[in-house]
Length: 118
Image 1 (cartoon, rainbow, N blue to C red):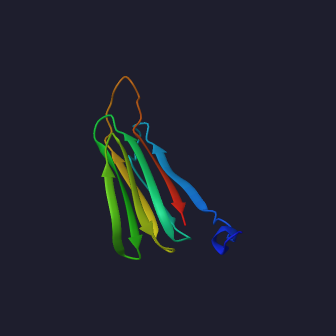
Image 2 (image 1 turned 135 degrees about the vertical axis):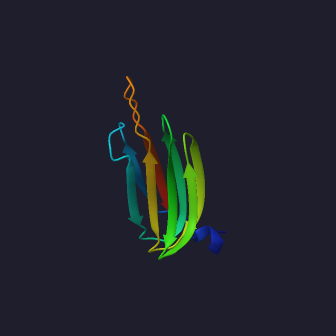
Image 3 (image 1 turned 90 degrees about the vertical axis):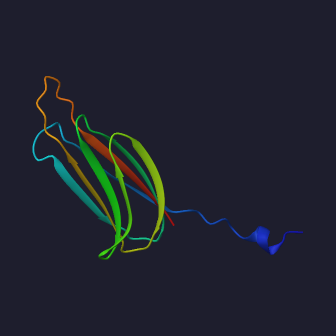
């Protein structure tokens, strides 16, 4: 005999992925910002990787209107975080580096991969 619970169909998770990324190549300006306004509620998974040859950092922030809900900062490492978000919140990524002259043009970079599951 099949119970009512067994007759229910599984709910498929819908997800949205997006990326904020930039490579500076040690050319001015050495600051970059990205913003994405979220169109659904759910769990936001943040995978942040960065490399700065001299000094630099990346800051990822989540805002609910003008109110800061979550923030993380990174320099030359990989970080992973999860935060619950609601529709209409904004995700901002701000990065800045340091221009230096060298024989090897190694560019500073960051990549932030976001996955939003509802």
